Amino acid sequence: MNEIKDGLEEYEQSLQKGGTQTYVLRLYISGITPRSTQAIVNIKKICEENLKGRYELEVIDIYQQPELAKDAEIIAAPTLIKKLPLPLRKLIGDMSNRERILVGLDLRPR
Image 1 (tube, rainbow, N blue to C red):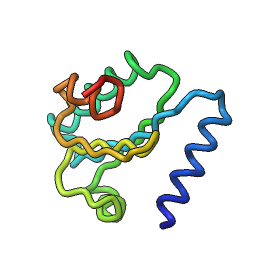
Image 2 (image 1 turned 45 degrees about the vertical axis):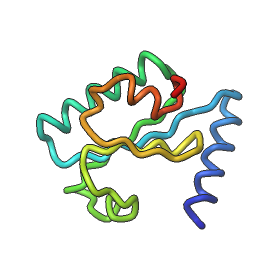
Image 3 (image 1 turned 135 degrees about the vertical axis):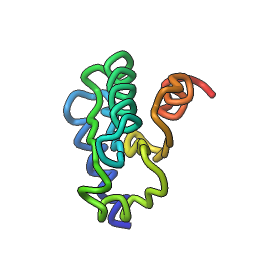
């Protein structure tokens, strides 16, 4: 229940910042591997091209912060979680399938 409350507070804060929706994203990676590095590059490029100035991206290494991965119920890495705007979405992989990522972020119709 606390997670829902925290999510609503983040959403309200993002609306107050300028009236546009800020995307709150978390990318869970497993160390500095080629797959993790590629996922970071891919998602940053997608965000800059489609959400410039309207996103917050936090990269979390599950080896460095395993408790965060457990709390988020991460079963594979890399995993991108779109916390806001709702609904919450989880996308698994190296973020190279651009269309799938755009649909998952609700930036393209299904």
